[in-house]
Structures are given as C-alpha cells and as structure tokens.
Amino acid sequence: MRKTVLFVTLLLTFIGGTAGAAHADPRVNTFERPARGSAYDLSQWAQDGWSAPWEQGMSTRSWIDGYNFHHTGGQSLRVFYPKGKIGPADSGAQAPLRLTPGREYYLSYWVRFSGDFSWGTTEFAGKVGIGLAGGKSCSGGQVCDGYNGFSSRMIWRSGGKAAIYYYHMGHEGQFGDFVDLKDASGHLLYWPRGKWVKVVQRLKVNTVTGSNANPDGEIDIWYNGVQAATIRNLRFVRNSDLVDRAYFSSFHGGDRPTFAPTNDSYIWYDDLKVSTNRAEICELASGGCHTRTLQAEDYSAVNGVTTKPSSDTGGSRTVTGIDSSDWIAFQNVAIPKAGRYLVEYRVASPNGNGRISLDINEGATPLGNVTVPNTGGFTSYRTISREVQLPAGTHQFGLYAVTGGFDINWWKLTQLS
Ligand SMILES: [Ca+2]
Ligand SMILES: [Ca+2]
Image 1 (cartoon, rainbow, N blue to C red):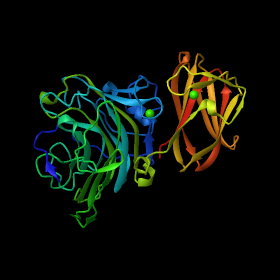
Image 2 (image 1 turned 90 degrees about the vertical axis):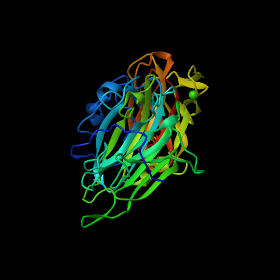
Image 3 (image 1 turned 45 degrees about the vertical axis):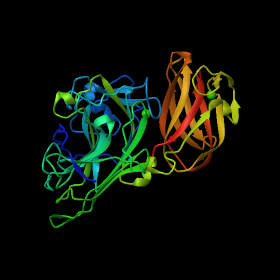
Image 4 (image 1 turned 60 degrees about the vertical axis):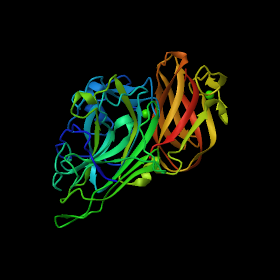
C-alpha cells in the first residue's frame, strides 16, 4: 500500500520554528468574521484564534469570498494559484498554525476546487489544504531521524487523484511516502472540480521507550465521511515531539514549470476544525453535522410582521414589514447534541442598522445579536451569521428585531462541533 514518491520532486519548505503559546482546542474557523473581499493575513487569522510564526501567500493570494462560494454561512477562504506559477513563494498559501501539542489530533475542513482547476501543464502534482505536523516538521526531501519531526499533508496527483503524503522515519525514497485515497469499494478517489468535499485527517504520534520509536504511529483519512486511507505501524519520533501544528500548505509543484497550472486556478476552504477528540468532529458522525433550515414564514407565533412572495432563490415567501420590537417564533426545533452551532439569516435590507436577537424559550437563554447590513435593497439578499452555543433538547427559538427595517427569507442552524 505504501509507495514512494518517484514521479515528482515535490517542492517543500522547511517548517522551522517552535510551537508557541497556543489557543485552547477544539477550534473552528468558518471564515465568517472578516470583511469580505479582504486578504486573510496572519493578523486576521490571529483575530479568529489561529496563530502562525510565518506565512507565504496569505497576504497576497488569499481572499475572504463573500460573493461566490461558501460551505456554511456567507463566506469562505479562497486561495489563488496563478497560471504558470509553482512553489509556495508564487502559488497558493502556507502557514504553520500552532496547536496545543497533543499525541493524537483530528483535523477537518471542506474544500472546493474551481470548475476549471488546472492540475498542471505536463506534470501534475500539488498540495491541498491543511495537514498535521510536529517538532521540526520533517519535509522537503529530508531524512526523518526521529529528532526532526514529521509532516502529513494532502496532495493531488495526475487527473486530480487524491492522496496523503507523509514524512516519517524510514520513508522509502528521498521524498515522503504517499497513499492514494480509495472509496469503500477500493476505487481511486479524485478531487472533484466545482464541488465541496469534506476531508478529515487523524494523526497519532508513536510512543517512545527510551529513545526507541515504537511502531504504533497512525494516520487515517476520511473523504466525505468515509474512511479512505488507513496507515499503521508508523514511527515518527524518538523524542517527545507531538502534533503541534495544523500546517496550511497548498501550492502547485513540483520543482519545474511543467507542474504549473495552464490557467488561473482557485481553491475555496471552509469550516476548518481541529480537536484531540473525535466526538467534536461532527463531520465523522453518522449523518454528518446536524443542519436545519427554517423558512421564516413558517413561524409558529408572530408579532407585527407579514409575508410576501420572495425574490430570493430558495423559499417561496419572505417575512417583511419588520419593525423594531417585532418578532417571529419557531416551536419544537430539535437540537440533537449540545455544542457550537452557526446560525445563519438570509436577509435583505436597504438600511444599515437592522439588528436581530436570537433566544431560546422566550428569552430564557439569550443567544446574542447580529447586525443586518445594507444588502443593496429589499430584493438583494445576503447571508449573515453568528456562532452560538446551543443546549441539546427541543426548543422554541425566537427571532426578535431589536431594530427592524429588513426582510428575512429563511434562517438556518448548522452544528460546528
Ligand atoms: Ca463559512
Ligand atoms: Ca422563505
């Protein structure tokens, strides 16, 4: 099952630095907070609780997309892979995002390749999204001796073939080993163009006895919730290094221009999550992450509003005539598991100062406010969102207009952890 990378000398950057002060895990990034249309540089990452000692391409080739594609909410992170360019200095983006060191980590994200994404010119390989690494993050053609860390990242190969590419002690050739992803029937898996796919990686660092690396390190990959690679008996370290970074590392190449894309290409990322606890990665739960869309006009109780045909896509009617202090309520909304949720509101407004307050059980549990921006008018809809902590149970939700002057087509709850 294990193969050596012979077909390509993947261009890698040494991941130096030490793991500094880290934030508590689990952590989620929905890319909903930053202003849309802006670069997502390290100061923006830090505002969302993710820190890194350096980056490549984040300040120049990343963009908060609030216009085209998103998995949740109204925004995602778009990374640019320019035509004719290879390597992380000129293609894609990199940043080693610090984690609280842990022996075992789960990392999850959603990824969407552009509809005409180019896999390369005459040679085809590149890195996708976020991996896991630790210590000095052995990579870039290094020998991993047990004292210089390890790394494990996703790649694409010819035709968009999906694989996991990893550096451990005793990798077979000069470069890391890779394993192609396969579905339950043993068929090769390919990164799709123009479609969201969810990826989860689990990495467990081997135990160490004295300075002997016991062969009990493990990597697992799930593709759209189905196990797609199982790698066992790995030795990563002889020292006390643990998983200490979520390594954002994505670019074309390969060390030759033949790996460059033949047209400008993009990858969108959304709902990045890390946890040491599998139960907090709802992407791996049976049925995935709980989500429910509620049409605003399907309220169970109401004060002061009316409805009209919707000019938006999705949802035949919209709630309108919302003045300050008006509200709509929804009975019997089941939340199967306590946790962090994203609440989305599909709104239209010619005013910039609308304000929606969400609560459970007639205000017994307030869930905070969100501002409704000027979306360009009552026929121009936009999704706004807020993260909330919800208790399990069947609740009555209330949407209260602290300040009115907007229409709402639907609202939605999506489990994040
Ligand atoms: Ca999002
Ligand atoms: Ca509706």
